[in-house]
Length: 249
Ligand code: G3P
Ligand code: MG
Image (cartoon, rainbow, N blue to C red):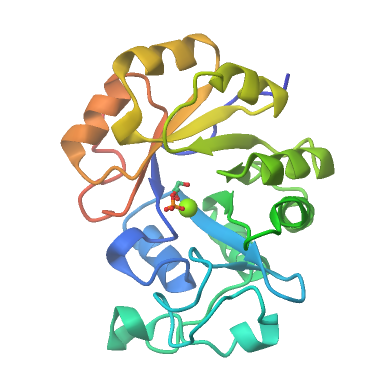
């Protein structure tokens, strides 16, 4: 069984900096530091030429000035995309960062990272394997490794096979009945779930089984406090302005 220590913070900034800046950009991560956050989550997939980069959706439409699926574009093409202008003129020209750029920034700032492996359609195993290798390389020698998570169990199993020493979390919307078997098989340290599907009883079961628990996306102080009282270790939030580090408990 892997070491189930949980060094990550009680508050995790969703998609870099939540809604304070364009998602999955370095501008977002900078907002995290400004609000005193010590941990962030981001979504990582592969470009056509196998570079790990940050993007949530399958397509570029919602969060950039480009259109169409991201999967067919090389990193050189993706690097030209404006991933900030859609969020406001102040962010115009913000780049789609590579995992390499984010790792350098996080390590320099002592920001802990939860890398959500978010494969382009049909590339689950390859993405899990490549993201794990890249994360291991980029965080080599770091005191606290990045936490790998995914909704895709095939991506997470590929990450496990590639770099078994990196901590993993299984990510779900609704907690499946066989959660304990899945966590055991993938040697995960944590379960990440939609907070709306969690009950006090399930939280108690998961904690009693020795796993860590993270809930997304929690955007009110009251709900964050309630979840923490149930034993939830971390909440992932968009509202860095409302959920302030040190003022949750
Ligand atoms: O990892 C937690 C959360 O990011 C999962 O949902 O759709 O925002 O990636 P999503
Ligand atoms: Mg995510």
